[in-house]
Length: 161
Image 1 (tube, rainbow, N blue to C red):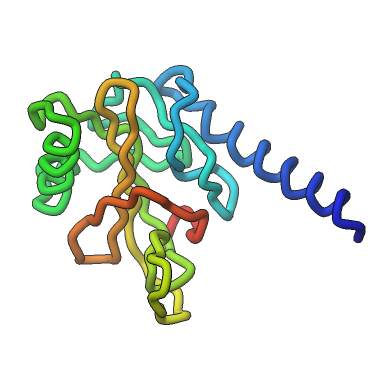
Image 2: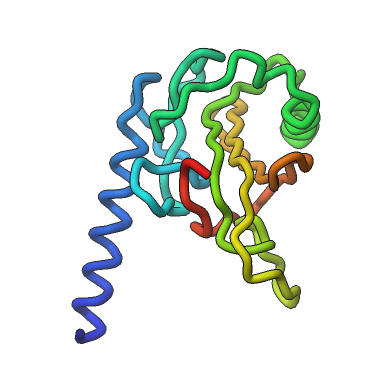
């Protein structure tokens, strides 16, 4: 397939995946980006999160219902505190915009660092997107591990773990 045609296909897939994320029961997207889980099998790093009115019982863009105890889980409490510290606000001002169980494509859990080697095995985990005002912060975790802030996320996961 010629390079131009390949690029067109990649762009169409990315746009379709991103548009599935923007349509959520929580309200319209605001155009901010880091990535959030998509409703397609493979997520993209260009999707957006939902409005800041997301509640603990809201559903994410991937159709996953947020667990009632999510905000009180120790790993999530730590991520909320980290996001608050990074943004200079109280943890109560940090909104859980998205959460989803995911399967990461490798040991980098969607946040590879240049020059590091990672296991090339699938890793079950979670994706957490937090909102402070109009800004989004993305946190990644392997199952039963703490969340880690990811400044430069990749599309290396499948939603639904």
